[in-house]
Image (cartoon, rainbow, N blue to C red; front, side, top):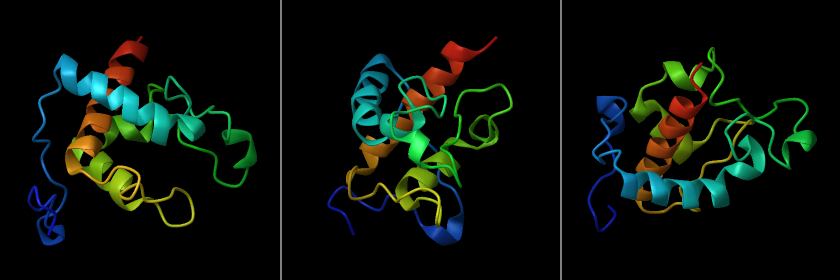
Length: 119
């Protein structure tokens, strides 16, 4: 178990976001996102990162489009996707973002990007 406590208990389903989406969290989330996510998902979450051209079979998800799957997912489901990845499509980022709070900050930043992209 991590020093800061369990991040989630799989048998209980997707966890609830314990990190307030305040300015500090969103700011930290941007830093983590820029390092761990933007290469594939792009700086604005549109799935057009500099590495995306190499991922032709399973291109990175657009996280901000009005019909984006990520808009339909709960915060906890996004957190679990960041944590565990998607088999054959997206790597698990638990080693890149080892503290659960880091991953929650990324979730808050993704929600921020979605609000910014809203029509």
